[in-house]
Image (cartoon, rainbow, N blue to C red; front, side, top):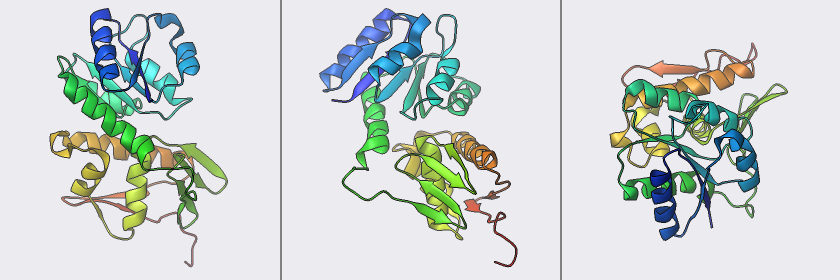
Length: 234
């Protein structure tokens, strides 16, 4: 049974989410003491986190960053904030999706199932681990790791999905619609800027391991890997 951690300071909303989650066969865990959020995260080891932005002391962006230091589990922000910048901030700080309040419980469940499916459903320990390699760059999509020239960095699920698509399509273009469909089930409803933000995050991860200007934006089409790190003569 997948465990869903609810980090929400409105007890009525948190209780409603927990009841509905458990109605659909999932386990809900509500955080009540926000002073030791990370201690409870380590103890519970949730498969997914529902995270509000407005929280006591530290906001949801802060807690999302803390979780990302130790885990790549899906994080869905749930907030009454409706501005585009709030959604951009949520994604830039490590979130995987964003739901605005007031919300329909069925939408929350659909989003949870989508993230669980993308994070865990496609992989099984009985299969040999998949490794995608291109000119010394190695992507391990099952553990969300990127290796290059003795360096490595951790990825979110969406960052891994984007790189997987770019490597699979190289040297062709990975179309925007194809990427949106791979990353989000209901991609028609996703703001176009959301994909741009995720690609920017991938660029930063590549920079962390010494690869600059690796993703080329093809206007009106999508994105393509630019193998600028290839040794001379190849």
